[in-house]
Image (cartoon, rainbow, N blue to C red; front, side, top):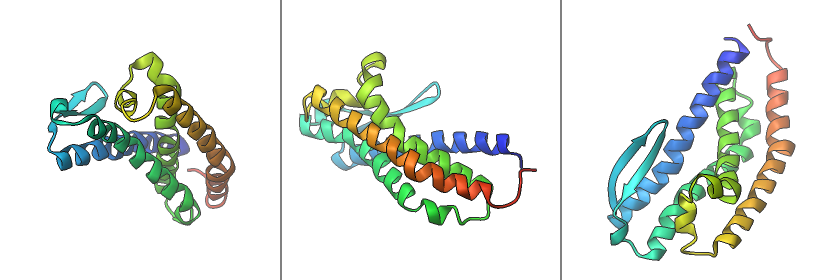
Length: 170
């Protein structure tokens, strides 16, 4: 399988896993507090619908933080296990986990620090019930910088070595 096809498979797997993990955490929490309404499919996206009136501000804040917490924990696990992942023989498997790691590291901190201003608050609306929005945006901005450094210094070199060793692309 050539490199371009592996990249597309990796990108598709990253999008799917991001939605499964991020929205899955929202779903689990909504079910836990008894506020789940429905799963909304919107274009290429998915959103967990809830009965907000059944939730306190604390519960709504936790609901909104749950997706980000899940993606960040996943990012750290994938980063810490990158050298083990790269021992796999399958280049497709490694490509998928490489792109999934990038998505988990960068999407939420980027959105919650910068993009939420331009595309609607989303999870930031609930997080702002727990912390001042400016403080949350600064926190996620700092996390974005840390995650970029983590990617640049750890993830990228590990996967680069793994893809340079082994058989050349077909």
